[in-house]
Amino acid sequence: VQLQASGGGLVQPGGSQRLSCAASGSIFSINSMGWHRQRPGKQRELVATAPSGRSLEYLDSVKGRFTIARDVEANIVYLQMNDLKPDDTAVYYCNVRCNRPSDWGIDDYWGQGTLVTVSS
Image 1 (cartoon, helix red, strand yellow):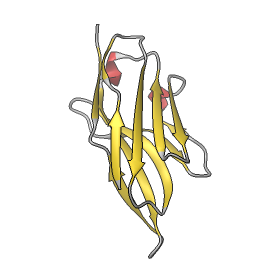
Image 2: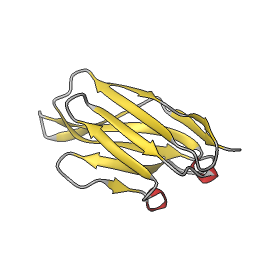
Image 3: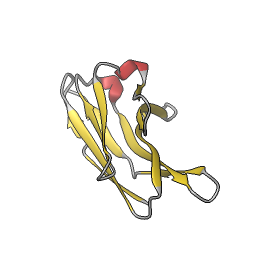
Image 4: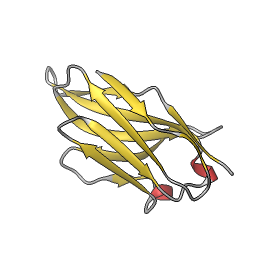
C-alpha cells in the first residue's frame, strides 16, 4: 500500500490549508484513515481520524477548525484546516489502517509527511 500526500506549505495565522492523501495498492479493506502531526519538540499526536462505519474523531485543540473527510471509493482522505494558528505548525502525516484478512489484524501505513508552517 502506498500513500501519496499533498498540500501543506506556509500560511498566515487565520488562514486555511487543505491536505489530501491518496492510498493505492493492494487494499483489502480500510479500517480507518486519518491524520497525525508532529510539532517541533513534541511527540506525534492524532489530529483527526475517519473510521469506517464509526464517528469522526478530533484532537480537542482542532475541533471546530479542522474537518476530516474521506472519499471512500477513491481511498482518499482530506484534512481541511481553517483558522490556523502558529501552534498548528507541524509535519502532518496521513495514516491508513487496513484490515488484514488472514488473521483480521490491522496493518498501519504512513504517508511521507508534509510540513505546514503557520507564520506571519
